[in-house]
Image (cartoon, rainbow, N blue to C red; front, side, top):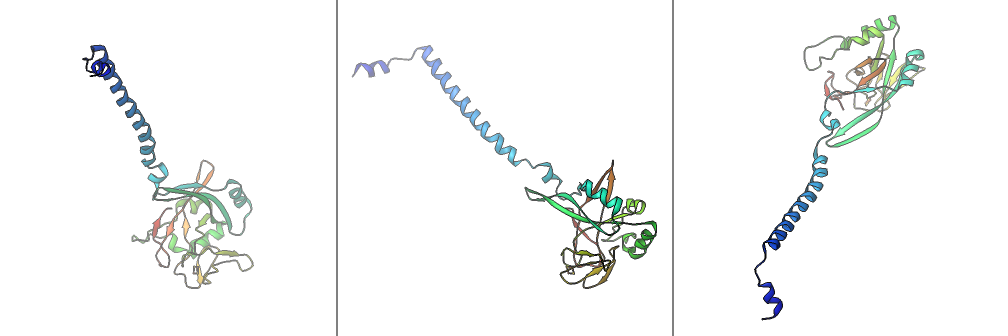
Length: 220
Ligand code: FES
């Protein structure tokens, strides 16, 4: 037997045992810290963001302030007003530009609006059950979704004819969104609007298409 193997066969001293135990414990601690360091970011990535948690709930979006001021002060015709909208699909949040059509009304026009659109001022008690918020009645402003209620194209304002015209299948609507011609089954869809401490905000709604009833599908 060599001298070195003889030395290794010597019983360890208490100090050696203690040092080896300490080193083993430190190895376990270091491994645990590395594991925690990896796990925290991974777990944090699995926690849903507020946008994800709020998906499906009505959201209020501030309208472009300059455009809204211009609309309030000058627009006799319907006007596009833009805002930044979030769309949440699962864990993916997409932020992009969107717009609504704003219509300003004199008191006389407001009376015309109510006469043209009784569907917006009556509660059916059924699936439709959508009433224009009180603010529309008081401040003479209505916001329409830019989505055609027929099959979802974007319609345009034709100034010289004073109508909204959808390029896809030719549906036409009055300035107040009353359906005139074409295959659509209802008038233009309003969007809730409010003035929060001087900031005009809108809620986006996806309505069911083609139905005569105005049915809310989602708020994204
Ligand atoms: Fe507008 Fe068909 S999508 S008329």
